[in-house]
Each structure stands twice: as C-alpha cells, then as structure tokens.
Image (cartoon, rainbow, N blue to C red):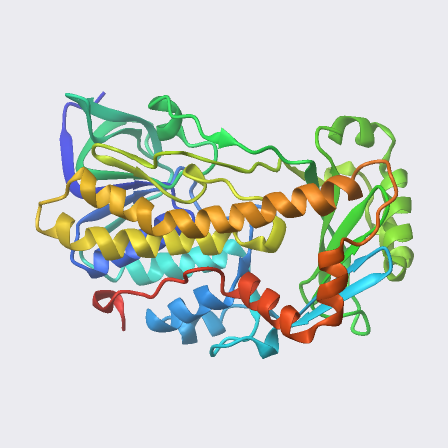
Length: 406
C-alpha cells in the first residue's frame, strides 16, 4: 500500500448516472470532487437507457441539450400495453413541459456526455479503472476510501464527504454492514434483441398474456426485448432450450414470429435479477448513499436512471455550499434523504402495486384479466395523460441549481 495519502472535498464511488451527474454539479460549484469508476469505459450491455422528460429538461438547464441531441437516440412518444385484450395507449405528447417524450440512448453515450462536460471543470477528476475497496473510518466517521488504481496499486484518498453511487451491490454499503429492506419481486427479466422493420409498431409496447409477458422497446433498427419470467425460474426455463423461448415470443408478439429465429442460443439472452429495496437511513457520519446504493428500483416504468439523477441533483443542491465552505455536518446529509424520501417511496409503492396486482398474476400459472384500474385507464383520456406525466416526469422533479446552469 502506498503511504501517500491524497485529499479532496468529495469522493464519489461509481461512475453511473448518479455519480457522473453529482461529479459534474459539484465541480461546477467549485468543489474538489473525484469520481472513481472501476471500469475503463462505460460500455455495459443492457444497462438502463431510458432518459425521461424530467432528465431531458435538466440537461437543457445544464447547457447540454444540444450535445445530447447529437447523440444517436430514439424518441418514444407513445406507450402501449395490452393486457388480455384490454389495451391502454398513452400519448406522451399531451404531458406538460418542453419534452413530451422519453429518449432511449445508450447509457455509455449519456455518461460520456456528462464526463466530457465535467472534465472541463478544474476541480473535477475522473479516475477510470479504479476500484473502491473500503471506506476509511476514523473515530466512527468515514473520512475517505481505500482504492486500487489503474496500475494495481492500493492507495488512500481522504475526503470530507464520501458518496456511494456504486449500485445495488454497493461495496461501501456492504463494508459498513448496511442492509436495505427488501420488498421482493415476482419476476426477473430476460433481455435480448430482435430486428425491427420500418412498418413495425413504433414506441414502447407491452404485451401481457397468461403465464408470460414481454415489452418491445423501439430502438430504430431493432427491438430491445424485455421478457418477464417468474422469479428464480431462469435455470429451469433455459433448460427447455431456446426454441421454447422463440415459441413463447411468437405467440405473445405475433408480428415478431418471422424473426424469432434470430435468437440462435441463450448466449443472446441476458438475465436481470430484479430487486426492489431501500435503506432506512441513507447516511452515516461522512458518507451518503444515493441511487441504487440507497434504493434499488424495479424496471417497471424504466425510472432507475431518472431517480438516480434526481438524487444527485438534490445532493449537489444541498451539499455544494457546505462542502465548499468546509462546514458539512450530518444534518446536511439528512436533508438530502428528506428531500428524496417521498419520491422514492411513491415510485416504489407504485412498483410494488404493479408487481402484486399485475405482474405476479402474469408470470404465474393462472388466468389473467385486466384489473379495474387498467380498464378505467383505457377508457379515460385524462387519466392516461396523468399516467404519462407520472412516468415521464415523476413525482417532485428536481431543477438544476443556478450555480450549475449554463
């Protein structure tokens, strides 16, 4: 281990949406911030990539709207779900605000956009191929991290604040013995791709049948497919062979029947272990957890990136001045959790209801019929607009603080 001890104002573990947004915002406030990302790049297969209207508005406030528009992406203006013959189609063009859509963009492009903007700030440092190993603890307080650098050396970095943005498998959370409350999930998700043709339906479409369900996400020249399976059934279903999956997809989504043979093997199918949980307390003296490290979200609604980004914006808004002026206390960390607690509970509660009332029945063995709420949604346009706003904007949306606007 190196005997040299470096210092900064804030060290962020994890270069995902929360970590990169927080790094950018704090740097624009003049705070010395170091983001540590254990990979050499941001390339990950089947990472969440739905950037919602509220996040698009924040990119505009950051002065990054034009740069984002240059990134290859797909705009989703309609959401459609068919549940045993009952169809609900939501037109996002009716929601309030300047962005009446959801953008689908590879997460690595989104993160590189944030990284490029942050690297223009003199107080920002991004360390790639750098793995956070454990928190430094002194007198019951977290005072930084021990990490392994890109050369394989173990080093220490002291900081007034350590922020865990390292996902639902957070190393820092585990090191501190913090255990989130799990709410369970009835399903896991298989991710794979199928070709898309110009005359195929546009937007995002969900098909929920008896015993299985799929969501087709329009990515332009292909569909990113999310196929829902019963929790813990991955091994048994794979043992049935890929032909069984082809048959199920063709039955559920008939217009894809002529191309399911593009699934050559289960090597093309990636498993997402769905989790839904949250910590009761997101902070300890010297350390704050946000994003999936504080609250893992279900893929229902595709809200993960946007909640993580909103966490980061709230964190920077509340903590930038105390960090810059060297007066940070636990009271400030508690204020971050207080601001983000209600939207987290609201979204997770909605996801738990969807799990219980819809998805558990869909991936089970019994017959499924559309719940009364779904039938009502299909008949009342105003409710569909409200639902679209709840998904694309979300509860208690954040605004970029003035110090970070360009």
